[in-house]
Image (cartoon, rainbow, N blue to C red; front, side, top):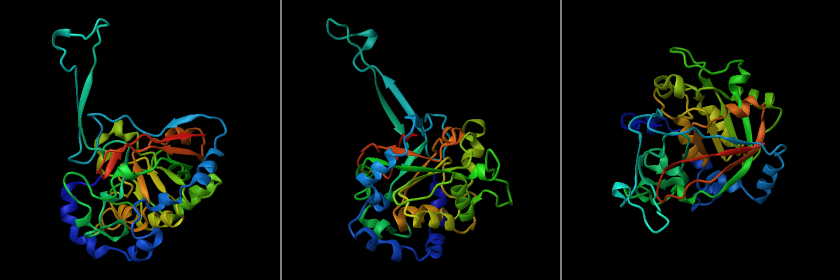
Length: 317
């Protein structure tokens, strides 16, 4: 999602452009030791609320297949090696002739459908809950906010079909124009069109129609993206949502609304408000079926010390 060269070039800009959000929505909100942010809004009652949205029992895969050809920002890549250990020449084991395959994978967890943890983004040298970078970063794995701490998630999901609101299959990115910016008005309009509301602890699925480009035009897919403005991100966070899912790779709009402020929504969600997000979510089937609310389920693989993780969210209607 964020290219290394871009981060280095933009470090000073981020410090200058930082809005005064961390003071209001930082440590005082869930406590100075908190690592879950808006996931604190999840509860047994929220799970039961999510179950009530199920009417048909139909399930939806909200993830894409990820492999060597999946486009993503440099230097992210995927490479696997499948082997048959200690079985040269077709050797088998036991009288039942047991054979087995195993594999080794070298991949960036931020490729494909993936979950961003709080350790993924900083504002200067501070992370979520005003945690200093020095208390989090180490090469062997982060010392706080690792994805292994993410609890099982079952909550109410809401689909905001912004592309449909605008009467298009896909919100395009046109050089020199601003139509790719998703605003507060877009979100409110999509919510009204869905005939529902947002509630604390919800998972919000924002549909732009961008995801099919991952196959039809991978270079365009990864070089730009329709996405949220900073005000739209703030508005969503202030509704108390726990997770924001997008059918693109950046959450933010690219090119950005302000060329000197890079990935502001990442900072608003992950640093200021404690809202997690998932990118490259497959929302088209939900939209095709006219789903506006559903049960959202997610388990994040508990690999220790990582800032991101590939995930397979599932919707049930």
